[in-house]
Length: 107
Length: 107
DNA sequence: ATAATATACCTCGAAATACAAGGCTTGTCA
DNA sequence: TGACAAGCCTTGTATTTCGAGGTATATTAT
Image (cartoon, rainbow over all chains, first blue to last red; front, side):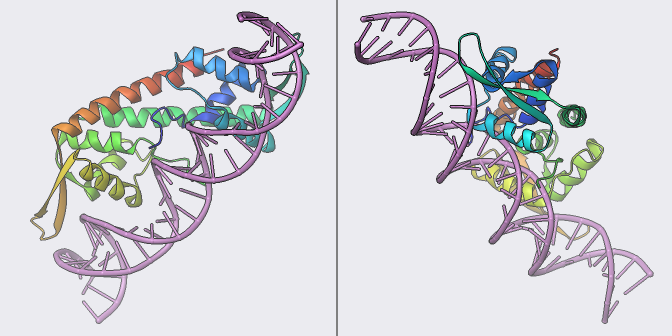
């Protein structure tokens, strides 16, 4: 049975995070966990393939940087193309949300 | 490529429709199309397996009835168990919606 | 010094979901 | 008669997510 916690709109969320600041994978997972009060948790097995896809499609670029602590991190940066994709996915989310709520308000 | 119109929360929507009135499959598709202004369209290949699952799990019961026009229709009726499932799925939808919007309001 | 834990990245395979594309039957209308 | 709408259904495929691993380095506890 698939988890009910399923993320479903992963790329939208990832793109939005990167519109705020460049981030690395592990950081995104922590940021999400905090921001949505553990309503869902993005799993690494979900995130990293998504990031690779976004990189391949040109929505993000990546660069490696060593933290003060000495660990290497892979930062992702949103491109102009990525911003357009974010705008489009946000629009689609609003439409989807509105449609579900329209149905739920029936009766 | 999977459609962007994906329904994702099919059972929630179906359960809610049936909380308003007993309905048959074809009718649900038309009702949804109308209610959410064609934002998404539930496909038959999606709906009928869902209905079968809900029936198997006891969330709905089904009965056949012949319309005035003479065509046979399979009506679905929401059970008490189905109402509980609807309440739970609605709660989860609200949480999910809130969490996504919390992330989108960052920055 | 050594063990354990946290940070940080990644991959593979299984399970779930939705849809396209069909099929079947009966009724209506030209 | 033929075409189309109503109405139900199934199979195969593509996609998505996640569980469960693996690897490596730095910190902390023992």
